[in-house]
Amino acid sequence: MGMQSSVTETMKEFRSFALRANALDLAIGVAVGGAFTAVVQAIVSGFFTPLIAAIFGQASFANLYFTINGSHILYGLFINAIVTLLIVSATLFFFVVKPINTIRRRLGHDAPAPLVAACPACLTPINVESKRCASCTEVLPSGWANL
Image 1 (cartoon, rainbow, N blue to C red):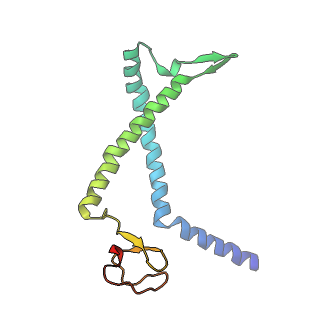
Image 2 (cartoon, helix red, strand yellow):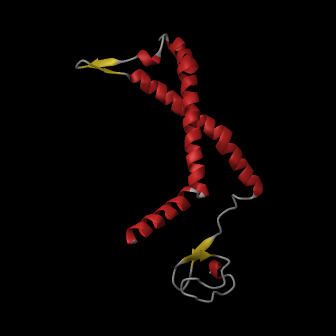
């Protein structure tokens, strides 16, 4: 009986975790990110790599390799991965991060951090507008931070 209630509690806890908004958002983000990366990889290998390879006179980066003791080191695949990383990073920055930062700034979510100073009694950093220290409960005189 004790084992069954333990399993039931664990399942309830797992369901609570799995249905939490952050977990669902993360799962959706990972799935969409994987699909987005696959699309970008296809664009890189089908368009950008041949374009870059044409400029440098090489038919395809994927075929670039060198041999050490009979093993082929495919450094062309590494170049493709670097190009993919740069494109994914630039796309996310310009189409997700920049617009979100602009929206946050306009809505006032990026307010500057409050100024802090050390409490004169206990040296705990506190907001300069404080009237009492939260750590030592010292009553602070008006303009205490300018002292």
